[in-house]
Amino acid sequence: MPKRKRTYKYRLPFFGGIVLGSELLFWVVILQLMRIFGVFSTDSVGEVLSFLHLKYAWFFLLLPLLIGVFYYQIYKRNQMVDRLGSPKIQSTFLRRVSTTKVFWRFFFIRNALVFIIFALMQPVLGTKDVKGQSNGVELIFAVDVSNSMNTRDINGGETRLEVAKRTMNQLVNQSTSSRVGLLIFAGNAYPQLPLTADKEAAKMYIDELNTNFISNQGTNIAAALEESSIFFSNRKTKKVLVLITDGENHEGGMQEAYDALKDKNIDVLILGLGTEKGGIVPRSEAPNSVSLKDDLGRSVISKVNLKMLEDISNNLYGEVMLSNESFPNVSQFLTHINSSSSSNEVNLKFKVKENRYQWPLSVAILSIFLLFINESIPESKRQTNDT
Image (tube, rainbow, N blue to C red; front, side, top):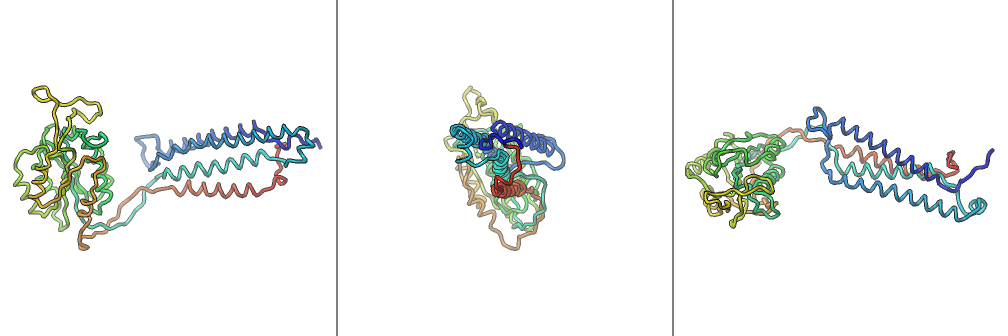
């Protein structure tokens, strides 16, 4: 039998080659699977894979660091063996090593790390039926989409409309309302989404709002209030209207709108967005858009008319809040919406996206288990070609 050589040193080229090769193969397979499940396509049909928290993908940058640590440790070990000199001295002070065992150690640690990251990203695939209970409240948003809602007098430099959309999504997510509707207004008022129990659809409509929806500019709050009164159903449920505007001006006809809302016992919550000091009105929602000009060539300034919003609130016995924060505190609104008698409660059945974080987490746990098995196998039991 030929004498074994270099039993105390790791095969560095072998380790580097198999690590890089397996890494390349892994990501080719993963990217292909993502392509099949429509991750990179905007027009995929059928089941589509998505991730709820893509920000955790940055942790994949730990992989090169992990490879570097293993490679450096093997390199330093081989240097130490070389300094000992003759094989006789090496056999006296060192144990034989297995490059294969080190590779599997790296492989299982690496897999645990990768699939824990995938679990943190929370992959979503398919839907599941969920039963829930709602308080039966009908919630309608009447949102101002006039050009003045592009004004950036919000802390952080966002537009008023951007904050309006975020606030509406928060109310949809955190309220127990059974049905949600959406109405937009500027110079006129138009229904955008009839009352629906599909909150995902409601949020989709909300996210698509912009100030180009209505060409007839202005802030006709009276039309918005009157149209909202028609928008609600005739069911004996609690009805809440959330009016979101900068309240810069209105065009009369308010008493008729007040009467229509009172006849249906509709609760009104008013959110004024912006500042009383105001800001320049841009031509569009683009960050660097030029300002609108008046007849004298001066930039148009939009100021929140808080007094007018308070007058509306007083006439309708509602609540009003003014905010120029990126994340307005609407806890008072939520308390009002969610407070309802038990007689209004209804049972709902709806579909939600299925979170599949358990799949990558299971692979990570299995990798850790296999790592312990790998470490428990003595070097003498490994019949490898590491020598």
